Length: 500
Image (cartoon, rainbow, N blue to C red; front, side, top):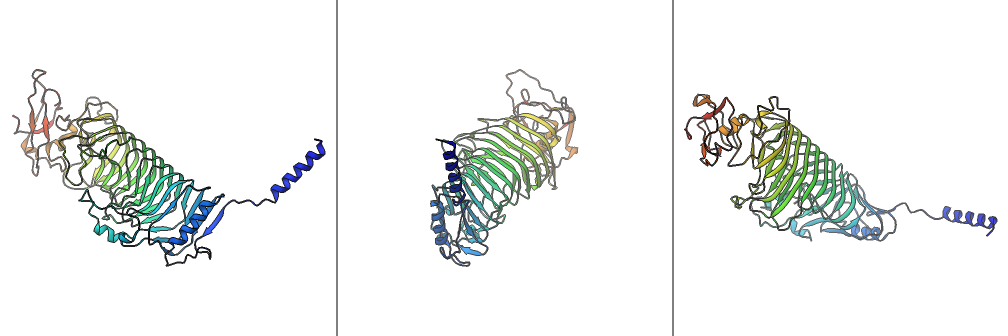
């Protein structure tokens, strides 16, 4: 083929490309004449028809809901598999029926299933109108309660972005993420009153690579709750409050739960929440694993339980706490956490005596108690702390060693602290002297300064019961083994009765 012919073919090909239409994106407006959606009317049918066309399009497409208020009176499910990426841009407000009975799905108002490369965007609002449902919801007292409707559910969705969207007053969870991969929430707003029942902001289960960034969440339950089978989660620059904090769990309630691993919670502010950084598992549970969890650069503002691992979680008081949790917790860090606690017990680790927590790090913890019912304190049971550094005495978990860490800045590796064989140190004076949840003020007139040293044979299993005669104390602090565990530094205050 000669050069002249080659030039002709090349020019012809370029001309064809130049005059071929380029489909960068196809636009589907639900209020157009084709779909007929109008403000203040039900646009369920218009939105589904637009979705059908977009899903069938071989080109990227945008479904557009303009500003205005629209009804979605039933349930709506956007189902793939679609031929190209789709963006659902909601600039208006979509309203759910107030009555749960009018939602045609028992557990979902707006659902996305079996989709790849979805974008949910716009400055719009998904208004769940959940006030009536909250009054009918008894899930805070009844473990067999009736399921309620989730505002927005993602099932088997991958490579998806949710940005600039508001979820308002959901009847149940605001967002549910299940069996998804590579999901990102950016600049989302999630809002419900602090007394709204089970209105978790974002619930994640069986999913990987989920990121929540620059997002504000205020609900009546967990701001973010993490179920089993999750990994590579990132929560960055999140504001939580009101609500129950950011929680791993609850776990251990079902057979064959998958591990929770690789979770980073960083640059988060908790404001007037019930909990801050929390891991919770059921007692008498099935097995499970929680590992590689990191809370870092956290601000607590008037939080009731700033740092808590609770392996006796039992919201309905129908559990057998005599049987320990079988969920193993390890490699957890709480670093650079500052702010205020509304209860004296700022650090509370209630780990399983069957599978104690291991490799737990607390460092850079600076919390103050804002109330008047005692002193700030910590309680740590069945936990092996890998590192304690830059932690004040009172919240050093009873494992601070005065000889090796006089300024509370050098890290060390203390032994396991157990609920009924609890290591006692000078840092726990207030905790030991009073009730574990509300330490009593110490009346020093009823105490004697003393130095106690261990004695007796190695096999000595005599138990020492420590009680308090301080005002307002309501319980003993537990049972201690003098030979193996009790190590009281000089100057430690103990009551005079109950052991002499």
